Image (tube, rainbow, N blue to C red):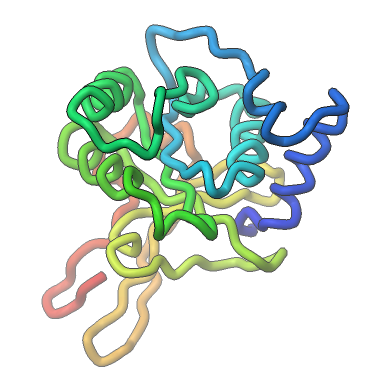
Length: 207
């Protein structure tokens, strides 16, 4: 079991771009933008991580999931502009997505939109999970920064399939507990209640 790593995700993006003898940025603009009535996944991401986003998008769509990534399938005129019109557009699209995956990559902390998307989807829609992309290959566990630790995270099982993992719970004294059952396959999580695989509160314990 392992988290997605930057080297393998970047290699996947580069391979896709190289197949068409184009840059990663151009490969992103050529991805099919046919709109669907419904999506399995809303991909919360930042243009700062373009290569990582392309690699993740390629991984998820190859696995058979319908994925909405706004500047791939329906790019906004100005992704950096925070406006009522842009917010309404993003809300409308999130409303037809079953789940939200938040790519925790190098640029996520600087994004204007990602935290807002996660909060809206969490409160108004359905299951939310973090999709960490780590610097090192073979990393087994993810310890989310700040509020990201309140959500389950996605990794790959031994067969390369997506699974959703309940994050560990840490007490105020620093003791860490891995709760059971601490993972489920993505399809099971996707069709379950919004709070499935989130860390549970036990008395004085906190996430």
